[in-house]
Length: 573
View 1 (cartoon, helix red, strand yellow):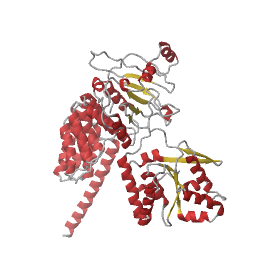
View 2: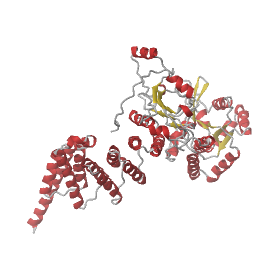
View 3: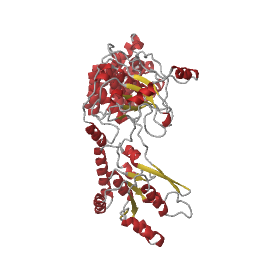
View 4: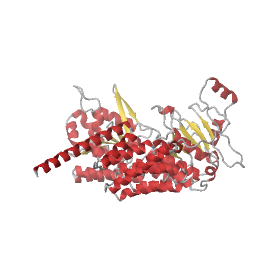
């Protein structure tokens, strides 16, 4: 009996050693991307009855799918027996995994979806993805990418749309590369409704687009269908009202106007925010009305959890009665700016300078200073401060937050609730702002925060940018699309300016910008500056209508050529 126990112990120890060695060798193969070595290990493990777990199967499937990554972009690369062999091994390993009653993980399904796509069975790949709910697996964006790309590359638009619907139902939202694929397949399918929808989704999810995405957008505006779709009689006031409710920069009502599109690669004027090509003024895009209300409610809810509820409620009621402010000033932040030296103090003179500067602006902004009551009581004891503080109180320009409160909640809520400017250098990264967890917080800050500097007592207010670097849709139906820049210099950024001159108030300006003489073109050639293209506009009998295309600098000049580029396949990965 004792000998048998010893043998069991030795066998168990050997088994653990074999499993440990198998794991080590498999990890080594994974690091080296050695599929053949991993498959040899797998066969030996089976013959030695080594117990395989989820990690082992996933490592093997990853190596199989990774070795076929070239196949996804170039089906001819693995058309021979080697490709078939890898696919066969991958499916055999997956079947072995299921037969061993080991549930797949997200990594398993992602690898198998890639293998199924490589095999040419895209529908099966999608079915695999849909089984994730059965196993209570949370998918990731990468899980959907192989299937989505495969459907789009085969121009199966409806199936591609079903992939996106499933993604969204699982809480996964497409990013630029996925939206560009969906946009491209919609252009190919002539689905103007989907093109419009994906342009809007692109607008809401990215600040600027890549060069390859810009090419897809240009291709849409160059097709005949794009020139034909649109509404001519939509109420202009209704469009303006919707744009205002949306926070500016878009209306989402559909294509406006009809006729051929002019597509220019333009810049934004250095002295303002107008397009060098069409002259249209870009806007600073804010969060929409619904988001603003939700944001204000979220701030108030969190504030009342952490403040004395009645105190904050009193502030809300007071603010509703006095809701005419156009700027909120974070008093402590302004007064303590650069006061961290020996003779530094809480500087009321800096606050006074900010309030005066705001009031002396073009529209004489009415401001509200938020100051903690403890600070107020200490300051008013000094006779030199008393008159100034009392004047602010009398003018309803000062609100003192109660003892024990955090005044951050008060100035943030006031600025959000009143949809006005907020003067503070606070980056709003503290824990209280992290609690908001809002995806539109950064957009709100960009639109509303006013920063400041004092240089030798000279105040300078740094107002929010005059326009947002984001896709913009105007009330006239034109589009402006920022393209990814090579550096952080906004002046160098190229924009797609997309207009219909027939319905654009700046049509004369656009046509003027397109008039470039032969001598100017030759001069540009001599200086080896970049050539820009004027795409050929086809006649009425043509099957496809092309956009007029040019590129402009801040000086509103450009070089044009008349030859239309051959249409090339999508450059998407």
